[in-house]
Length: 183
Image (cartoon, rainbow, N blue to C red; front, top):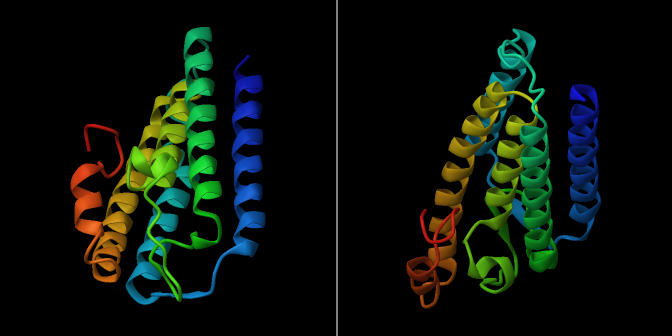
């Protein structure tokens, strides 16, 4: 069962990232601030590679509990589905984190009514689901991703507040960042 659950998780994540790459071909033009943001992405990537390379993520026993596998897979599917819904809803407005679009639009409906950063929320939920289904130690990767997403969201929000000074503050006040009604 452990191998099947691991394979299902791998296939779902691979399908998600394949969709993400294909969908990226249709985004609007813009520019990405690469200096500090690229350095942060590289550091996070190095941390994750080191965790995997040195076995930090495989030290705990894999889950053999059916309830954990089912719950984890449900959270994985719901999380990826939420992120895809948000990506589809953004349409051509989507971009790499901290991308500054030439013709920006503020999207506040669909999943953006629930949270300001539903793509990040969905990916984090999917990561938690993966950790529940496979190994608790995968929560380390989720924590690293959460730190990066909170940083990215904060930078994006500064940009959006400058781009939409009349409407963004009210939207920010009425909608939580990552977790509906909580945070």
